[in-house]
Image 1 (cartoon, rainbow, N blue to C red):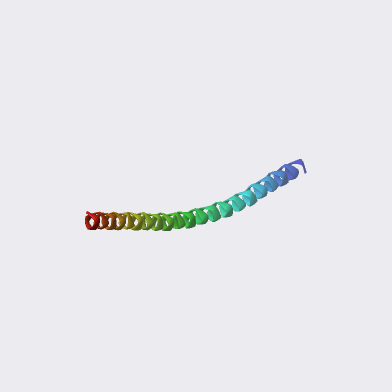
Image 2: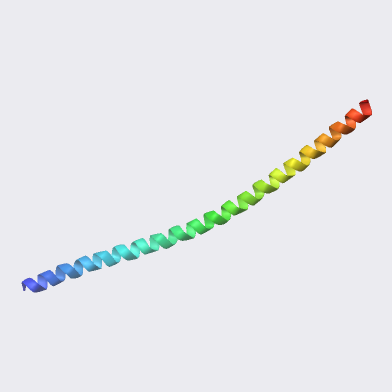
Length: 75
C-alpha cells in the first residue's frame, strides 16, 4: 500500500508539472504572437516616421528656395 501511495504522489506531481507546462507553453505562444504583432507595428511606425522626416526635409528645402527667391526679388 505504501508503494501505491508513493506512486500516486509521483503521478500527482507529474500531472501538476504537465499542467504547468501546458499553461506556460500556451502563455509563451501568446507572448510570441504578441511580440510578432508589436514588431510589425514598430516597423509600420518606423516607416511612417521616415516618411514624415523625408517630407519635412522636402518642405525645409522648399522653404529655403522660397526664401532665396524672396531675397533675389528684394535684391
